[in-house]
Length: 299
Image: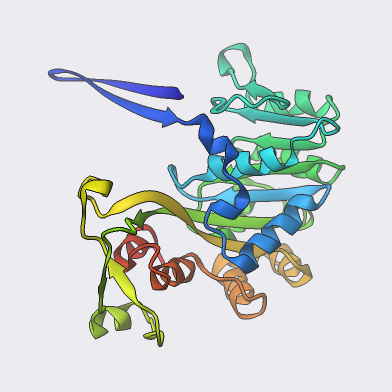
């Protein structure tokens, strides 16, 4: 178990926040992160490709690092050269070359990325794309034989495209390099011992544009000794998987708005948006409607 510590001086002492980095998270396979069957097949297909870019997007604390490390763990084989550049390195993984940025000595994401690309990597993981230079180098690398994995902070998958273009990356480069974008959030899982069924009000269903599914039973949190009276045990992802096809590439090159790209992905490619994925899990009794609404409020 590792810890990341943040200490903030305040008027009457200090405030300390500890973030626990459990090495057990490294053993979590992609099948256990919250992907629905159709989404996991699309994601795995992109991971098997030898080159191109896969982006994972979401706010801080949405499980992006866990998803990327699960991918790295799956790809980690003696015959493959896997290199990461991170700030900081969150988990130490045997068999993977890991680089931590250090701006004080000139080792930035962009500078480190240039250096590690001379090491003939098969897979490159960049902790976060923060600027044009890093994005530009990463995308060009994905076109020259490397599988590149990275993260962004956007509300949904389609918005990652416009974020990259807003950074200054040429639309044709985004269209050529990105194979798949996955957006995610974390929701608390209901305690399976004490959860109790309930009937959502017609008003709530109408607000969510949600049709009452015949045979579905919704549950809410109650609380017991097993879950420390919280009603919840553990967390899981709600996930949106966006595949980039030829029509999407055309939309990107034409600088289409993110809502246009998302509309095409939903109506033509069958993409399941974040909130819909979460509500499906609420219908399955895994989480609550309230949890899903709380983390997808921007939709």
